[in-house]
Length: 323
Image (cartoon, rainbow, N blue to C red; front, side, top):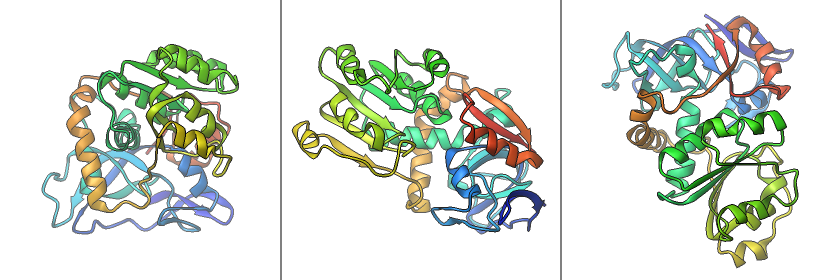
């Protein structure tokens, strides 16, 4: 099969062994795959959890048709249209644990649209509901809201009954579009007064739940913006892996600061997260109430160009590879 493979000379479109499903896996004939920030790290030769290095097939999610299933798989059969988080998704074929996969809704959702959803759905539902313990009527702030995951996070928060949904972006054009995706208050974190705007919008209380994809560069301001007994869920570190942290402010507000990642979760834990997300969100996804914009599509053979487009940080929404 053909795949986007990490080499000493960068990502190349080349032949790779076709995977075979283990007893707990499905084999997907990939029709489309979408890019995530972690793909940039893998493409540069870095490790992401248990994957990485020369010979690695890039990609974290895809959509396609089930070609074969392992002996332990009961919920899927050959011919099913599926979307799934799947390591090595930038290829003609990929395997995934059955518990990570969803059947594509029969509502004319394209493979390109479906490929955009798995990582964002499981990441943001877990951040908001699992780790973040969101309750109806609470306020939510998404740091890095113009990313695909952020755009879906705001929609999920609004769908689940958040009273006010806020999002941040330092790009003027992208920030202006956040309201299209459930954002009530768009914020620019280059403005040192942005925590004051959060407090004003919440009647002086501060925000109940922050889902943070930026981290280091905004960590202390997040705590300024948070309510007493607020929660901050550390999902990403686009603003840096390390930085200053005001421990006294953290203690003063009695903030729950929660780190999450899928890299150290067991298959059973991921299955539970995916199942919970499907239970809460699938009716809305089937009804088209939760969706993501596609910024640009590339053929699989141009995976390196697609990664360069993401690295340039000029996109809004998802970048998709068509197989």
